[in-house]
Length: 128
Image (cartoon, rainbow, N blue to C red; front, side, top):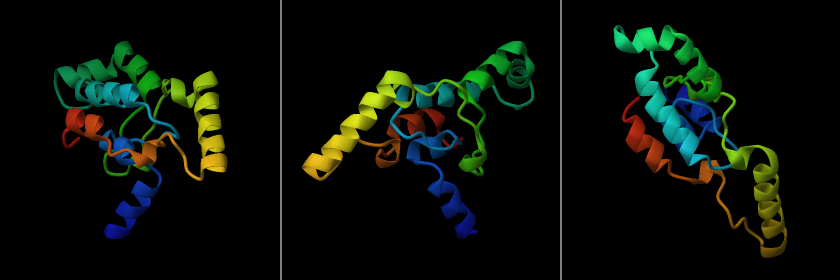
């Protein structure tokens, strides 16, 4: 039982695990918070939640923020919204800062998502 859990967490991070999704390269706390809140609304729990999840609004949510898999976060999806530090110029400059600080200072001065404890998404998501 411990082996699959260890393998799953190797593809994720504390933040990713808290919302049942694979890791991002760089932090995206706002996206993780939106995923944690959205998963409480858009899920297959019978009643209003299932109705919302099966609606066009649920489809838009899952397209943008992905779908959780709390049993194996590596099988969850993140969706198209990944936060500015994981796309476009934000990703480029964040990664360049990491590269040159590591090269010239001997360590990265900014955290990767895997380096963070995931406190915010854990608090919002609860136990999934």
